[in-house]
Length: 282
Ligand code: SAM
Image (cartoon, rainbow, N blue to C red; front, side):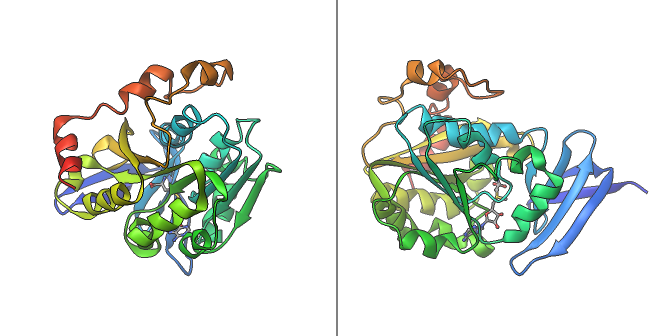
């Protein structure tokens, strides 16, 4: 009988992938973790039945979370990743020889260990000598840091379960304090299409706007996330993602990307009217 992975995107809309093999299932102290294999998306994994990463389209998310801030602030040397247990964000960061240290604070060590086993494509660079892994809650971790990072990337789950506090005013203020004067924070802004129905992301965006003098949102398209249309927030103390964009400096690095390029960097901040309205009213 055909087996399907099914994710409920709204109360009456589902996304599903035919499963060739259910590779692993376990429940950690934090969440249910499942790894699957499919023809169209390769190997993929889900936390509490919410799809996180597929081998085929993960490059889109991981390139967009990393290369946008790196092309604005090429002097980034110290980076903190919060969440990101699959290692895809760290993999993109390790492509920059100028980055000196990458700390990743992931609440659930099992996600990391299982991704190292089943998804070496994303987790393969977690052993880079510049990478230091901390297995604890990112919320209390960042609260202990002051003036420590050039870049903080919040590569989290949705605002439910262990990820909930990663969308609070207190957390954004702690990130602000943990960043250096020209530091940048990138965080999840979820799907604008479905988020019109909910107020969670609007609330998160309005909290960031109150904390950081520069707060903008950029978009990208990823087939396996709800509605295929996804947003990241770009917040900073000083640097503007468009006025301070340095395409020539970034292009000299010669990084080959499947999704990100300098034209797309600029274009990704141009948002559809309904998204602009949603953010303006946040
Ligand atoms: N790209 C993915 C997505 O949006 O579907 C998210 C990737 S990553 C797997 C998310 C990680 O955030 C999970 O492994 C989860 O354990 C971790 N996480 C959730 N809440 C956390 C917290 N408070 N502190 C640290 N890590 C957290």
